[in-house]
Amino acid sequence: MAVYDEIMAKYREAALTGSVIAIMGWDMECYIPPRGYPLRGEQLGLLGQMRQRMLSSPELGKLLDKAESKAESSKLNEVQQRNIYLLRRQYDIMVKIPEELTMAIARQATKAVNIWKQTKAKNDWKTFQPELAELITLLRKRGEILMEVRQAPTLYDAFIDVFEPKMTQDKISKVFTELRNDLIPLVDKYSKAVKSSDFSFMSRKVPVEQQRKISTALCDYIQYDTTSNQAGGRVDETEHPFTTGYYDDVRITTHYYEENFAASLYSVLHEGGHALYEQNYPPEGKFQPWGDATSYGVHESQSRFVENMLGRSKEFITYFLPTLNKITNNTFKDISVDQMTQAVNKVERSKIRIEADEVTYSLHIIIRFEIERDLFANKVDVTELPSVWNEKYDKYLGVEIRNDSEGVMQDTHWASGYHGYFPSYALGNIYGGQFLAAMEKKLPNWLDLVASGEFGPIKQWMVTNVHLKGDLYNPEDLLQRITGETLNAKPFIYYLTTKYKNIFG
Image 1: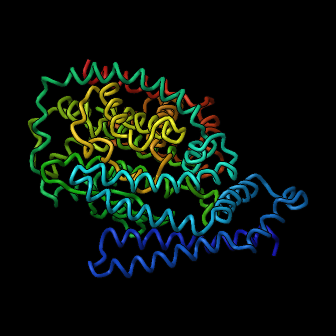
Image 2 (image 1 turned 135 degrees about the horizontal axis):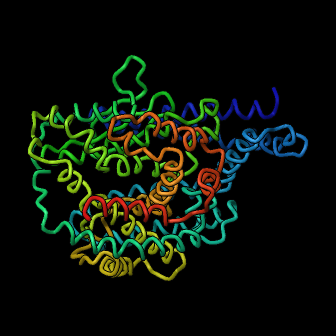
């Protein structure tokens, strides 16, 4: 067997194991009986260990060395070279970070998350602080190794690279500063515009059974098949919505609130956007490193496009409101398209990220990015996080944080060790704005298509230009190929400004 083929055969086993882990994780969130959790933890732990050994074996290392030699590399095409490159990135991290450090981080993150849950409920930052500090100390050690392996210029760049390959804090800082400066006046303008509006109709009761039918109708609209005998998706119920799976079996979850039907409606669209991306990776890339998303930010661009750019448009409301009324027995018969459109696009100066609207959301992320950047540059100490957090919320969003539970302790990411993850959320908005501008050149009537229920051409543009590219290119390279531009927040700001002007005047 040729060297490259032998490497791909080994990766196929790891990819299959990863797909099993994903579905077992889904089952644990959706259907496992209470007594099953300890056993599932053992099962997932074993599978994870097996997968790590597959991807870090000395035998695989020797094969990669051979494949990277001049004699072997010259035989490989672009896709094959990308596969070797991506696998090398994984391999070097797995073999160069000591197993004892990986285990120490996993143990401390588990402890920190457990204590975070308890202390958040009690608004007890002082008890949580030393656990977070210990986790960050361990992460710094891992980050120093990541810096060397990934040739990252700074410690924080090494963390960012895990989620957004080859993206740097300097590039992000520049574009986030521009985005922040453009968003703050929009927040001021449109938070005032909705103050006198009455959106209480959004809390009208919609029974869960009706909401399940709404979810099915939404999935049908975006062509995420959950009902036919060829379906590759399904919608289940969990406390926190998520998407998981692989190619032909990609599942989403939502949560239903009878007096907040919009929560599940938009979580289904959001997770459905993620699922469409994962179902439409390049078929020839299945069980290969390049057959995956290029970054978390590009993944987020797809979910937020479906949720916000499509799902909160007046055109989508025009199309879907009759369906909503049909399913809910005319619960919203007295509500006009304009009223519903304004309600799902209202701008509020909120304290909580996951409750934020489309205009304020990126500011929540920018605050977290700036804090993480300064933390790993030793400009901010862990003990100062609450005060820095509160100052930035006052400055950027004009809200007063009354306690740490609604402030610095609101997210699980830091307790889980996911430092460097937050920028991907706002980068997703920026990528999405640039993708939208490119799509409008080919589909200038895309909103007319939305209003008539014709999602097919829109989906196909995304599939052709984004999904089928998989991880063949780093995110900024993909952006350049699709749009002809480097990272640029202006298209997203233009989209928001035009949209909100049309909705609110």
